[in-house]
Length: 447
Image 1 (cartoon, helix red, strand yellow):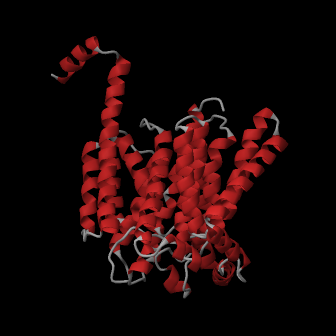
Image 2 (cartoon, one colour):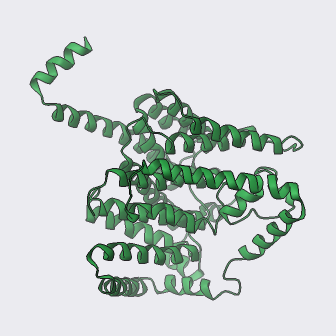
C-alpha cells in the first residue's frame, strides 16, 4: 500500500518537492523534541516548578521513537551543552540505545574496540576499589561508545553542518537559561561589581536545591568558544545567515566573558587571529586583513567597555592575580611527581574513577593530556593519540581539507589544556563537533 501511495505521489510531485516536504516534517519532529527539553528546563529553572528529574527522560524517549539516526545525532548535539542540568547518565544510555537501534549497518572495528578497551582498562583499575557507582561507569562507557559510533560512522547519511548548528543552539540556550535564572537572584550590576563568575547557579540557590542547569564557569566558556568556532565555519560555508550567526556569536561571547575565564579570552584571541589569517591567505592581503581585524576588535572592545566597564575590569583583574594559572601549575606538578614514582603507574595509570583516592589529590588534573595519562598511563595516552589521529584521517576521507574546517578541533585542543576532559564525561563530546567540522570540508563550497 505504501509503495502504491509513493508511486502515485511521485506522478503528481517532483522528487525535489517530496524531499523538501520530508525534510520539513523531519525538522518539525526534531524541533518538537528540542522544545520539550527547553520547556522543562525553563519551567524548572526559571518559573520555579518542582519537576522530578526523570520527567526529562520523556522528550528523549520521544526522540528515540520519532527521529531517525541522523536526527538523533542533531538532537544529541543540542543536548551536549545542557547535559549538566539533566539526568545525563540515564539519557546517555538511552541515546546510546537509540543510536544502536536506529543504525542499520554493521559496526566497524573502531566503533566496537575503543569502548571495549576503555571499559576493560577501567575494570582492571576498579578490581580493588570498593566505592563503585554502576550508573556513573555506565554513563562514562556510554559516552565513549557514542563518540566512537558517531566519529567513525562512514555509512549513514549525516548532515555535519546540522551537528555544528544544533550544538551552537544548545550552547546559546545554556547561556540564556543560566543568565535568566541568575538574574532572578542577583542583578547583572551586582554580579559585575562583585566579580561573580557566571555559571554555577546552584551556589547562589543553596545546597538544598536539586538538579538545575548550571556548570563550572570554565566548562561554559569551553562550550561557548567551540560554538563560536563552529558558527564561523557555518557562516564561511554559507550554512547559516550572517545575521543569525552574528547574533549567536554575540550571545556566546557575552556569556563567555561573564565566566571571567582567562582561557576563554586567550583562546578567543587566538581564534580571531587564526580566522583572519585564513581569510587573508587566498587574497594575499595578510597585513590589511590583520589591521582591519585589529580595528574591529578594538571597536568591539570599546563598545563592551562602554556598556559593561566592570566586566572588562574583572577580566583584567583575573590576569593580574598572583597565580595566573589558578594553581593549575601546582596540580600539574603534583600529578607528574606522583606518576614518576612508580613505573607501573607511569605505564598503565591508576584509572579514572579511583584517581583521587589512589593519588590522594584534592583536585583532578586540569589538563586533558595529563588526565588521560594519569588515568590510563603512557600506554593509554599513546592509544588516545592514535585514536584521535585516526578520527581525523577517516574524517578527511583521503581529501585535502581547508584549514578553516579544523578550527573547532584546534580550539578544543587548546582549551582542554586548562580544564578536565574525561570527567565530567560530557566534556569529551565536543570531539564530535571537531570531527564533524572536518567532515564538512570534504563536501565544502569554495571559500
